[in-house]
Amino acid sequence: MTVDQITYLVFGIVLVVALVFDLGLLSKKGQTVSIKQALLQTFFWVGLALAFFVFVWIEKGQRLALEYLSAYLMEWSLSIDNIFVFILIFSAFSVKEKNYGRVLLIGILMAIVFRVIFITVGVALVERFHWILYLFGAFLMYTGYKMFTASDEEEFNPQDSKVYLFMKKFLPLAPHDGNGQFMVRENGRPLYTTLFVVVIMLAAIDLVFALDSIPAVMGISRDRLVIYTSNIFAVLGLRSLFFLLRGAVTKFDYLQQGIAVVLVFIGVKMLAEHWINQWVDKQVQVFISLGVIMVCISGSVFYSIFVNRKGVPPDINDKSIS
Image (cartoon, rainbow, N blue to C red; front, side):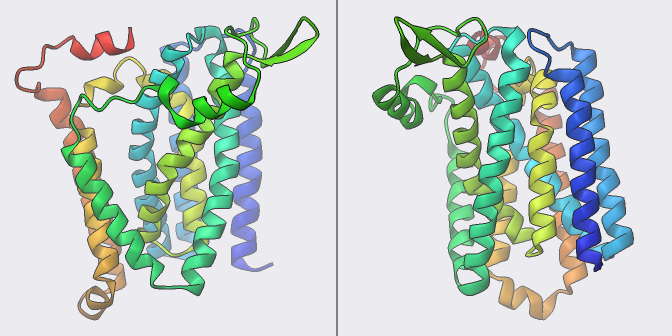
């Protein structure tokens, strides 16, 4: 077997074992998840991702391992934005806490399938039409600018989203959760419950986020292994991160700006790649990218924690999710 085949095999085995372990802990029907359990589960997924980083370093070398770590940190920080939207979706459809784990699990597994398809198509297009990378770079710069300048008033309303309106138009929907079921029969007619709607919306919203995150990862590395594994590890850790951060995620007021700076940086890097490669060694580029990501994300989180926004009452965010 080749090194690539061994690496993919190890990744697949680790993934299956981890999912079995995760299923046994968090997806029992009607079970609520405590902060302690969410913290342990978050440590588990992050530890697994970092263990894979060590494995990649041993099998594939330092540069690829650091590219993987940079990509994973990028995806992990972007996933915090996902969590805020997930909170809005659960609130809008009045999902009971005992159903959170199961709904998140199914939605995230669907999101992984969609991401794998999206990544495969994206990589194939870039390999055939290299100039698409410049479009990705310009798109990331535009997205970063919009994210940096976005105001608090631009709040996402799940019930006004195109995904929900599409389902409402073409599917028979029940105005309740069917006591934890995804589909019920009423008067001999099958109806899809609010839990089914939420699962589809979680997967669809994650795919929208992938429009930013996958080009960003491709700006860090062109290696398929890095792109696939960093995305999948970050998405699989979303559920435990949701339970851990759902009460605190809205406190990270400046995280969005930190992510925006990283997206602009990667966009510029993609647009100027030809000239950068002439002046800066690839290994040095990887260290610079990793450093920028870590400084921007950690800096924006700490700044959010220790500095209150001027003129914003401390409890304003709490009201948005109550």
